[in-house]
Image (cartoon, rainbow, N blue to C red; front, top):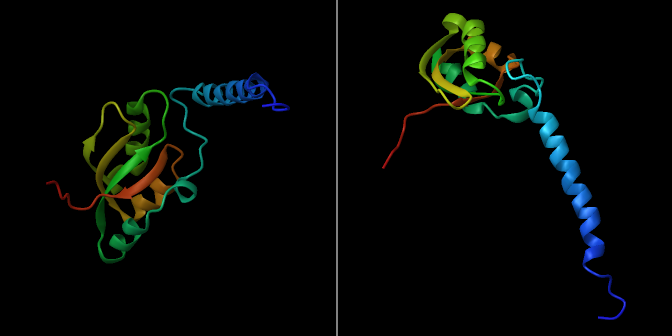
Length: 130
């Protein structure tokens, strides 16, 4: 087609954009492996309505704590367990992913939502496997 720019004219700006995005991603992954995350707390990234509803009628409920990513998940798990103490009864501690499951009290739920290593507190209802 006459007057149409060559496809290569679009490659340079797209390559620059791709390089910039890759650099930003690497910078985000390069933060300290065992340092607490500076990511926003669960209120900004997670909806915990089911947990809140369950804790209105019960002293505790089953949850999955999804922790921030990066570094050794066991270090973050240990920090969260230490902070929550008796307000979180551990049921399952995952070895290779940043998360753990257990039973949490109202007080533990409030503290978990503010913990810098906790990305999300999800309701862990009864399973329905096929």
